[in-house]
Image (cartoon, rainbow, N blue to C red; front, side, top):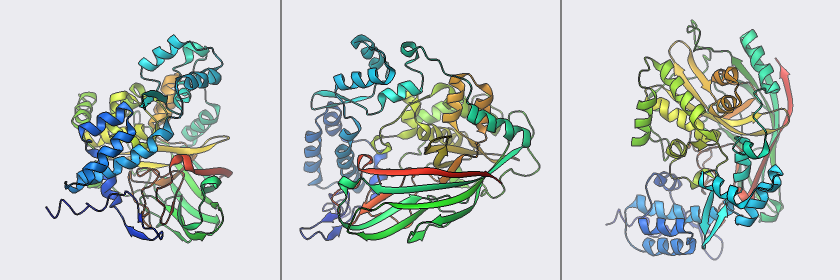
Length: 484
């Protein structure tokens, strides 16, 4: 039983700290995260979803006193951290949730209508000590995806002037090239700051496909990850006595070349020659959540039935995600048991879950597919975003943005819907090329988001717990966007 008991003393997910504040031990973070692809013991799962979080924690602690396989121990330890974070995602009781909805849409939503919306699956909730508690952004999801149109009377506008003008120019000229300058930062909320030794990671543009000429203009990081890192960051290792924001200004060139694989033959050479050739990893499962479950295998076979080539298979995957999956804000990815399958079963998800589902469906169907994530840049907002790449013979690597494409489909813009199969607009910053990629240098504590990298991560050596989304803030500002 030696192998079974190796983790017996490692019952804290993060660095264990003694009375003097000295680091004593660390859990294998990668194994902890990968353990999330297995279920919880039934009694613990029952307590968790019944809202008996204290009981679930006590049951886990009792289990951890015994011997068990390493992966099961890692799963239980990881679940303790998920349970600790879970209530922060669901702050409102029913009366508060109903009031938030009324305030958002300026309509006196009735109790009966609220019940109908909840039964339809669009009001996300959990039970907490016998009371329903509601997801912090449930109402904004329904407003964004049009689920409240019958109450507000507002219908989606098919026109998006900012995007439509760029798309027309890309089609006419065959390309669009922009030098983009961003200022970004990451910090712990001031009220949560504790003096100590900090490691901060801030996403930084990766050299890949459409992106090049990355230049750090200002900032004093202690290092920069390699230009083709799976999740590229700049990082600081600092001993802080006072609250501090880690920030930098950088520029890069975003160069989009127009592709119309649905209507035109493949070019003589790939559109993005700087992008690495497909490899076995581009058709494989990976980590905790890029998994080919039985349901997803069946789904991929169903939607690609009759497809004669990789182009048709990729289009069928894109078409399914953009027409059958509705956009919704999600709780932290760390709280889901299976990202791709959740999206395909519930037929809802944010940009990341939609992009991941398309990658999985393509790979199952034999079409190489990859991940990209970072930020999208709108007229007056820079925000986190995820999208996908897929490979077609002759064309090479192309892009797909299921959430932008899905929004266009629901608004009635077939032109924009088709554009985002094969293309992106240039208003992106790509920092991550692989889902669930590790940082360089590696973090010692569990990340706020172990799967994606968009707004930065911070850890303090010796901290009892990692920073969660509710204790952590990042920001980005568009400084310049210039033709080049």
